Image (tube, rainbow, N blue to C red):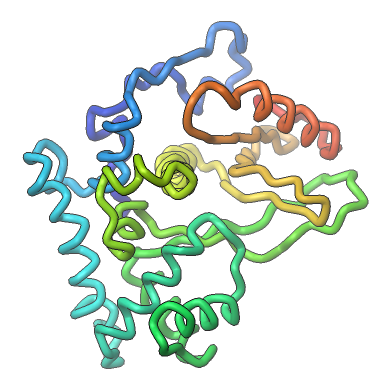
Length: 270
């Protein structure tokens, strides 16, 4: 029930394999370069991994995500027998989209809805919306990771919020590729969510668990992948961002994170 990954849609060159990263293969032999420009990346975020969109003309492809979003609000979320107001469903999904990639708590979502739409949901009703959207595979949430940590910092255990495909968030916020190009901060958030989508698919295939890390010092890691291998677990950490200018900074952060983890057998990569 997952959308297509960039490899499946033919938009990734597939030169880096998650399986290779965990295999013990020499890291010098594992490398890859993304040759997709920002304009095309923005399009891929908004298009999503919907099979009907892949290979379609751009305008038709972008309509697929919008149609899926509308179907969720109008029909799919009520397949559990509970009739929900489509406008309130859209209101909730817009707020959820604004908090993509965060550990926002439900009261924050409620306040955001009130601020932007002049209406809100009580927390019990919000629980039912989240449950219904999970049951339709529209949203997914990453559990926090705190295995084998040596840090004295407090680990944030709240789940990290994502739509199953970032195109749902783009549709909820009525964004097109040009909007993302003109708002690189938001673009970066939805790009990260697209990366999580693909990692989630690859990880599930390999039997790897995927988590998110954040602690009270402000240290965050986009994805921590944990793999039960032999007598112990091994793990790897992943950071994502747009452009090559921040690579050194991201690498330094991962090296710092590595010092906080005391686990036999890891990391396999970072």
